[in-house]
Every structure is written in C-alpha cells, then in structure tokens.
Length: 125
Image 1 (cartoon, rainbow, N blue to C red):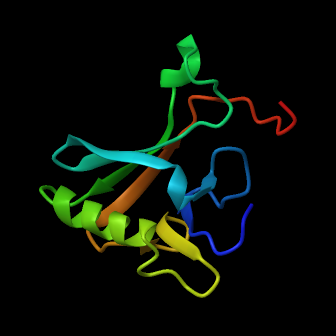
Image 2 (image 1 turned 60 degrees about the horizontal axis):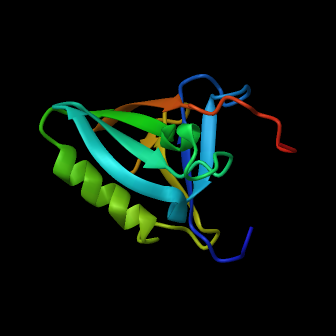
C-alpha cells in the first residue's frame, strides 16, 4: 500500500471482530454510488481478485448505506468529500459508517451493510 492514500472505513454493528463485520478500502477503489431506494444507496468498489473480461468481473463488493428518506444527494456529497480526503485525519483514515461507535460521515446515515460478492478471504489467491 502506498503512503498518503485515503482509506475508507465501514463497520456493521457486530464489534468488527469477524469476517465481513468491517471493511477498510482505499478511496481510489470506489467506482460509484448508486441510490437503490429513497432511504438506501450502494457504494461499489473495484474487486481486485476478479479478472476483467471474465464472467466474474461484474461481481462487485459494496456497502449499502441507510439514511433519512430523500437525503441521497447530501449523503453522496459527504462520501465524495471523504473520497477526496476532505475530512481525513493526518493518518488518511476516514470513517464513512461505523455502527459500533455510532460515527458517520453524514448525520442522515443510520445503518451500513457490507456485501462481499467475492467471498474468498484467502489473501494468497
């Protein structure tokens, strides 16, 4: 991992002590934010395990944020600010949604769910 990169942190309300409880990814891996309902959106990430051009390359890892109805634009603006390092600490670590500690990049966010479409957790693959 290169130095001076912004890293985004997400944690479900499960103590971040087991597989899929939390996720920390480089901001540069975000490929889009898509509203899925009036109260939810998905943030999609590049999946470095999948080879582009294969049948599996459309399987993205993502997080789903839940927020106050109608607040997608405000939530998206806050996330984009984080992607650009606006609220980053000197460490480059930015919390987008941490249910364990009730910390969110925007006050309208109240839930996060992490979805791994690539469930192979072996880092040697």
